[in-house]
View (spheres, helix red, strand yellow):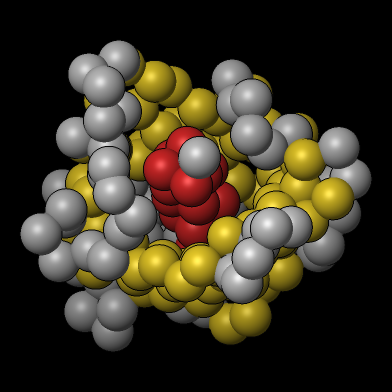
Length: 152
């Protein structure tokens, strides 16, 4: 069940890009070897980001652990308001808060219930996107993960 949240965390955390002219806007590819993800992990993920100072558009494409292609989309503003997630059965809403010029915090919800929280941060050299996220579970302790993406 947790593996299905990885693409959502990726999309939300990709929102760490702040500004159309900013070097963070672009394409990011998941580095499976350096990430700490639940098993089975997706086979691949690539996030394409378009951003300006107030809003962000993310298109995440990849192949899940069973070999099925997926595509998720988010179009959102910063400021903690609710925005919808397209093509996800696990998360229907996200909330984003800009922390500084290299990171954001996020919360993902399903039917109004928080199911994931985390932070997306861009490295100082703008070559790595680090996504630290926790999956919140009703039946046990939260699970913590790290996904690392390389700029393409």
